[in-house]
Length: 135
Ligand SMILES: CC(C)(COP(=O)(O)OP(=O)(O)OC[C@H]1O[C@@H](n2cnc3c(N)ncnc32)[C@H](O)[C@@H]1OP(=O)(O)O)[C@@H](O)C(=O)NCCC(=O)NCCS
Image (tube, helix red, strand yellow):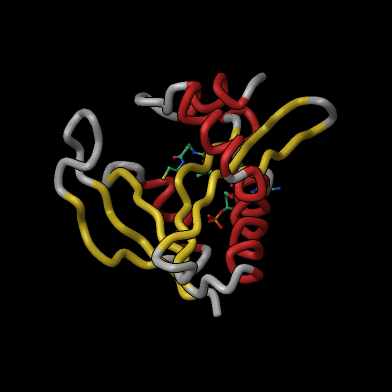
């Protein structure tokens, strides 16, 4: 399965291939892919923002067939380590207010809800902004 196929399985409004290619080509060190055997089972895309102070998790997705096996945690730990090494001491992300599984997943990893962005998604759903202090 390709990263784009995974993205399409995880999200009802997947990023187009061009956006995934842009992140992979422009910030390859912040585009992490988890594999089992030769199979891609998950990925996370990060970005460093605000003069290097903040790491932004742009997207994280694990193949639904592989949920609950630790891949999501491994991807989060890995991208947060990279943020820390780049001296970004805060990690932030947006998540659909209806995505209760992801919200609990993030809360279990130390993220807290900081606020709401009204109509953030294409279908007008609101997003929670969540963040975690890294150092
Ligand atoms: C959110 C998401 C990335 C989590 O990925 P995951 O691989 O299931 O995550 P993990 O397996 O590391 O952790 C999930 C839970 O399973 C548990 N778990 C981990 N390994 C396990 C194992 N071997 N057996 C049973 N449970 C396990 C974890 O403890 C965790 O529970 P917790 O959150 O209560 O601590 C995944 O559900 C996903 O891709 N969702 C769709 C896309 C999405 O919503 N992305 C976020 C958008 S902002």
